[in-house]
Image (cartoon, rainbow, N blue to C red):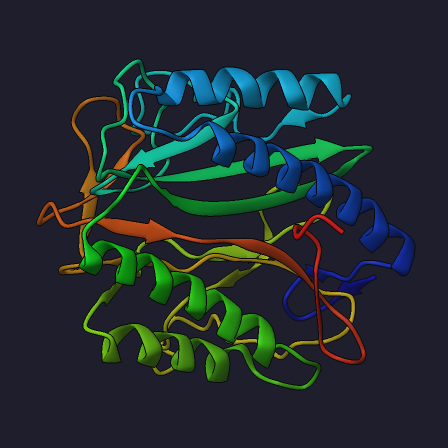
Amino acid sequence: MIVPNAMIVLKSAREIELMRAAGRLVCQVLDALERMITPGVTTAALDAVASRLIQEAGATALFLGVKNAQARFPFPASICASVNDAVVHGVPSDRPLAAGDIVSVDCGVRYKGFCGDSARTFAVGKVAPQTQRLMDVTRATLDLAIARMRPKVRWSVIAAEMQRMVEEAGFGVVTEFVGHGIGRDMHEEPKVPNYFDGGRDGSDFELVPGMTLAIEPMVTAGRPTVKFADRDGWTIVTKDGSAAAHFEHTVAITRDGSDVLTDGR
């Protein structure tokens, strides 16, 4: 079913269960990578394991081969691995992770025709207390959004609460990149911001049962402005070099509230 005014594709109960199967695989991949993350491991090694697990499951990686106008090459990996000041879209590399680093791993798959998308930020060994707090606040912001999601609530109400939680903690909300609808395609309508701009961009919408959304707060320890890194045209970094964290779940709206599809159930 399509919501006419916004072209938002609503999913049936059967389609939501197919998305849950894709989300379960994403969760399994992230769990496996979490067990690998120690000082000395490379993000290329993480990508190799993710690629193998996705292929063995009969799924395809959503990110592999994606193109954008700024990049010199299609995205070359199955996961995004964004280290320290990298916010999103980090390209896996042979650089070993060091104790005190953080790495945000984003994984998306298409399985049996439907997509799942999730991200987590991991500490590499022991991190500074403020860095741990950044991760905790970002994860709590995602949890807040999921708890507030239910039919007839406007997204702007939730987004404003997300922004308030982040900014009251002294951190910044990235505004150049937002969450999105998801289903048969990785990116569907609507756009799902993590902030409220007073409705100027026309992105507000009302939650209704059957919506499936990728909720993904991106939070910076310093100023929230970002830029493309010069090195590849993919990686998005903070302009001031401050650390960034990113957590994401694929979530369905039900008649009773929200249903996380990427938590492994």
